[in-house]
Image 1 (cartoon, rainbow, N blue to C red):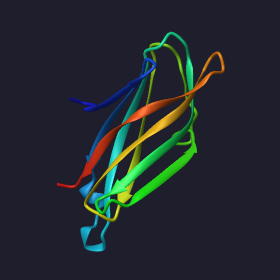
Image 2: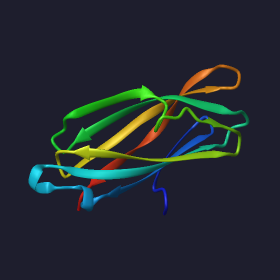
Image 3: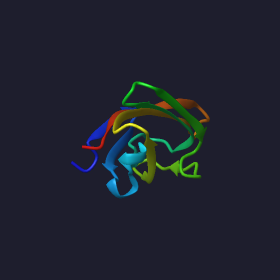
Length: 126
């Protein structure tokens, strides 16, 4: 399955596929790196715009890292009904495993803001 991690909120599906990048990792210096590919599909009847993101990243020791910011990869995409938006980003950790989850703050064309769940996914180096 291309996107094994899926969450749907108000008709907005967030799909995530994650890959361990051994060529960018260096376990001898406690550095492991993953890329994740996100596809946001608008299955609702109205256009939505992604305003911000909020990630919770938990490393293999249980340490929680919060990442909050505007948009994704420098964009605040407007996603029409039936359309999707894809992006790829990355996550370094100082442990060989962890997990990520979060939410996107969206606004619909009526100006109503709401949060869309990002599914939890594992960061595994083995």
